[in-house]
Image (spheres, rainbow, N blue to C red):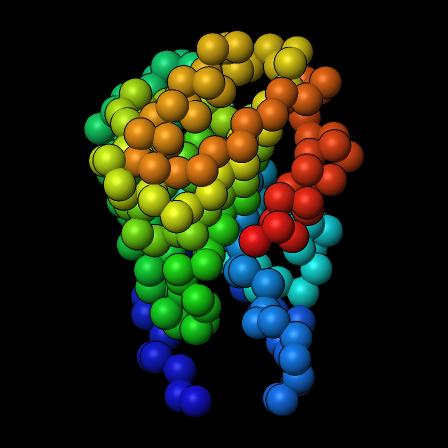
Length: 220
Ligand code: MLT
C-alpha cells in the first residue's frame, strides 16, 4: 500500500510501528490500539517509550516532543507560573498538536479512531485538552497525574463511546485534590466513560500506574 507523502511535521517525534500484527488468516483480533505518548515537563519523546511498551506490548507508538521550552525544560504549552495557565495559549497549542496528530496518523497509517493518548503530568494535561477541544482525533486517554488547566467542559455527546483512565496520587504536591474529580466531570459532560482512581502515590509514576493502565487497555 502506498503511503501518503511525508508532510512537513511540526513536532519532532519518534514512531515505533506495531509489532503485534495478526498473521494473514489468523483468528487473532486486530492489532492493539496505537498509543500517543505525551511526556511531562522536562522530558522528551524518549521518556514514555518503555511505559508504552510495558502497558501495551506490540502497539504502535507515536511520541512527539513538546515544543515549548521553559528554561530548557520542554513542555506542550507555556504556563504563567506553577499551576497558573493562559487559556488562549492552551487552546492554541492544543489545536497545533491535534493538527500534527492528524497528519502523523495519516502518514503512519494508524487507526486514528482507536488512538489512545497516554500522557504524564504536562503531557496528561494536553491529552485532556485534546479530548475536550478536539474529541474526534482520539479514541481515549490514559491521564497520569493530570489537573484542570482549562476549565471548559466537553461539548455534550462529543466523547460518547470514548474511555478515559484518570490516575492520580493521593499525596501529590502538584495536583490539588479537587482537580481529578473536576476533570472527570468536564470529560463526562461530553459522554466519556471515565474511570478515576486515586493511588497511594505522589507525582511520580509507580508500578501501580503501570498495572492499572495495562488492565484498562486490555479491557478494550
Ligand atoms: C507540570 O507539568 O508541572 C504540571 O503537571 C502542570 C502543568 O502542565 O504545568
